[in-house]
Length: 165
Image 1 (cartoon, rainbow, N blue to C red):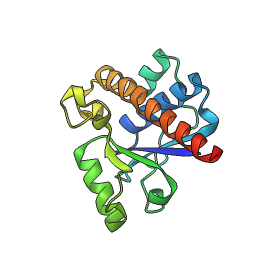
Image 2: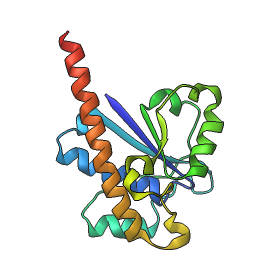
Image 3: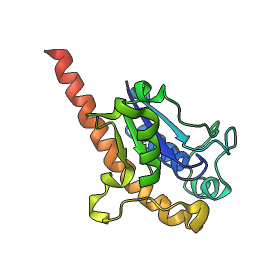
């Protein structure tokens, strides 16, 4: 099984949106059983809360489920539990790397979401909690998750080839 953790600041806007979108895309590709998806925040002030109203509205509008999703804080164990730790912005990545410390050395599992979309020439997914622009963020996340699905499919294919050997 491959596992993906999306990380943003409070785990109520960007990362739960990415979690829900990726789950939907994996379901459409019939890969749900092979990939675990979760999200977390670097901060603790929204723990236990459901996604932000703006995130819920855009997911509802696009018929994407966020059922059962509640904010949680990223924890040290997440480094071992996830193959991909995808940070929504530079500060989130810095905080995650600081939490994980030397475990990150030499690992490529922690990276910024926008590295999936290098053609965009922007480092960070803007935080709609502050900008209010949930549509822009949804569009970026949808495009980036499609690229991540392709990466995951390649990894699953490689694992299948190795299992045959």
